[in-house]
Image: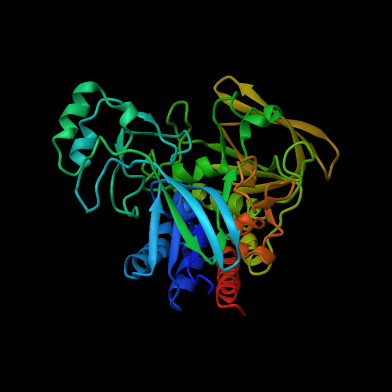
Length: 411
C-alpha cells in the first residue's frame, strides 16, 4: 500500500503553500527547512508583489495555518541527505543540526543583548550583524531563538547553561522519513555579485545588491528601514539601478530572472517615498513588466525624478566616496559617465540547488533548476522550477501539491 505522507523540502512561501494545500485535504506533511526559521526569501523583503505588502502580511497567516494543523510537521535546521525507493514508498534520510534552544516561547532577548560578540548576519546579507543567540525577525516561526554556540565565550556559555531553555549539549541527529511523494520548494539565492568584477561588486564601496537594499528598507533591518549608504550612513542624493546584473549573460546567468525589473521599480519607489529630493536613474536593456505590472511601471515612471536609460553598463568604479558608472546609451549610441552616491545591482535569482550536492533521484538542468522528476514522484515548486514572483510561486506550489496528492493516492 502506498504511503500517503508527503515531504516538502524548503519552508519558504512555495513550500508553505504546497504543504498546507496537501495537509488541508488530509495528508501528513513534513517540511524540511535548512534555516532556523520558515519564510525563505519573502521574509527578507521590505514589501512584495502584487499588493506591496510587508512579508508579515502573507507569512503570518501561513505560519498560523501551519501551527494549527497537526498534520504539518516542521523540521528546521534540517537537510535531506539521502533518498531511496520510489513513488508511494520513499525513504528519506534527514540530518538535523542542534538549535540548542528548547521548544516554547521563552523570551531570551535579554540574554542575547548581554552577549559580547556580534557576527555577520546571514539574514541581513552582509548589511548587519547578529548575536550568538538570535531570532531573524520579529514574527519568526518557529518563534524560538537559535544559539550559535561557536561564537560564545567560555563565561557566556557557563551563564547560558544555567538557563533551562538552553541545551548546550544538544547534538546533530539523523532521522528517516517514509513518504509517498516529494516536493522540492528549495527556492532561490541571489547571484553572487562578487563575480561581477566589471560592475564593482565587492570592491567598490556603496555598490549593493537589490536584496541588500530590501534589508536596508525593511523596518526590521539593520538600519530600521532607513535607506543609507553603507560607508557613512548618509542618505543618498543620487541612486542608480543597474538591470540584468549577471542575468541574460552567457558568462553568468543565461536566463532572465523575471523579477528584477519589477524589484528595481519597487525599490525606486521606496527611495522616492523616503527621500523626496533624491534622483534615481535606472539603466536597463529591456524593462519587463508583464501583465498587470505594466500599470505599476507607468505609475512609477511618471515620477519626474526617476529617469530610465536604455543601455548596457560597461564599468562601475569608485570616484572619491561616490560611484562612477560608465554606460553606452543604446538610443544615442554615445558612451558616457555619471557619478552617484549609491548604485544598486539588480542581481538575478539563481536556484538554491545550483552547485549543491543532490540526493539520488534529484536532477537539475545546467542552470540548477529541477527537471525530470515527475515520473518519479518528485515535483518542483516555485523558484526551484523556474524564476517566478511570489504570486506565481504560490500557484506553482498548488500545482505541485496536486500532483503529489495524485501520486500518493495512485491516480
